[in-house]
Every structure is written in C-alpha cells, then in structure tokens.
Image 1: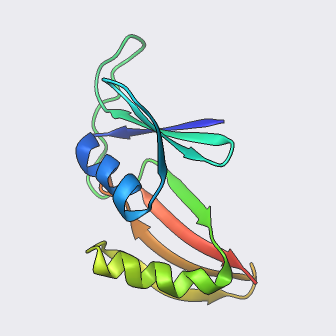
Image 2: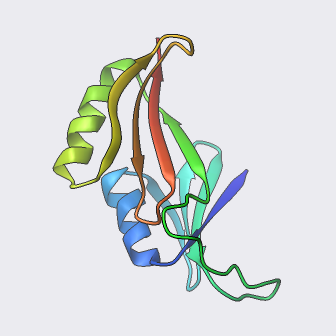
Length: 121
C-alpha cells in the first residue's frame, strides 16, 4: 500500500518524518519522497496542480489525514519525551484509552495532519 500526503511545505514534512519520527527514506525523486513503513510506503508530494487535477489549499486548522503508528507499550513515554525535545506541538500527551486498550500520544505533523502514536496493552 502507498499512502500519499500532499504538502504545502514538503521540506518541513520530509524533515519531520525522517528526522523526528525516524522513518527510513526509500526513494527521493524530484517531486516526491517515499518512506518505508514495513511493507508500505508513505509518500510526500507537493500540493498543487499536477496531470490529473489541482489539489488546492487546505482550510487553516483542518487535517487532510490521520495516521496512527503502533509502537511497543514501553516506548510511548519515550516517544512523547522525544517529540517534546524536538519541539513538536503535542495535542494530547500520553493517555490511556481503556475502551480501546491503547495508550496514545497525539500530535500534528508540519502540514497539520493528525498523528497518533499508540501502543496496545
């Protein structure tokens, strides 16, 4: 599976996914960058006109997508500390969600998309 994030500021998004979240760079092309996540790719490309359509702007404050990354339970607090040290604004710090049996941290990427780091317990 390939998921594509449309970016107004691709360089900021690339830096975030590679250097803050630590994703492995798979491919770096002129108009897109892809990161390997298991058998899947997460691709970042500039927002705007292309051969099929014009992506147009995203209204301020809205997220285009929500991504959830699963980590081991013992990693949640370390992830939170790493994100804070990296200057990432946190929407919700480490929180247990008993109904889902998840512990989560929620933040936004540089494009305003919602990112959830979660662990199952």
